[in-house]
Image (cartoon, rainbow, N blue to C red):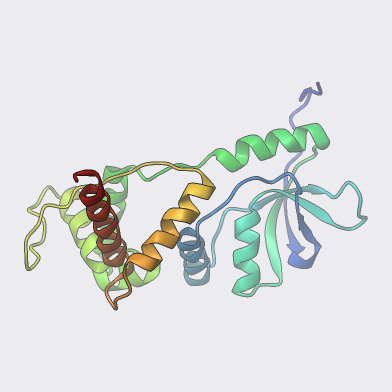
Length: 212
């Protein structure tokens, strides 16, 4: 097994997107919602973490992506012609290690840290502006802002207490549940409310069938 005897040289360069090719072993996936958020972020701020690449092992003058496949897709969609990249010196084995590690260094939000960021942004921007920029609802932003400031949560018509629910699933399970969401409800309500309504219908049907 190859080892890193010396720290690999890292150089930030601007490379044409047409010269960046995905690594065939990349297994990282991103939901449509998260990808849309990524596109909005780059389009609004113009900033992103540099793409990690190495020289393509088979194609002269080309580069292979080790980390940042989704950022490259987003840049192409905006569209941009070049991307800021960090060049890693990596052989095939090291490239596979990067794919396993770098592409897994992401997780779900820490609610209170996210609330703190929202609070700071709300000092200079309205919740409506933030909703447009980061893709969360205006109500969600106001609730997180209140949470960070330890204030009473903003009242809604029904004034319900909203509880978070987080769970993980395989890609196949996610596809099936998403399809069920789409079939269970079709309204003009916000996406989050449509999904909650769909989940309630699915849960109700399940309980009715199993309580007979």
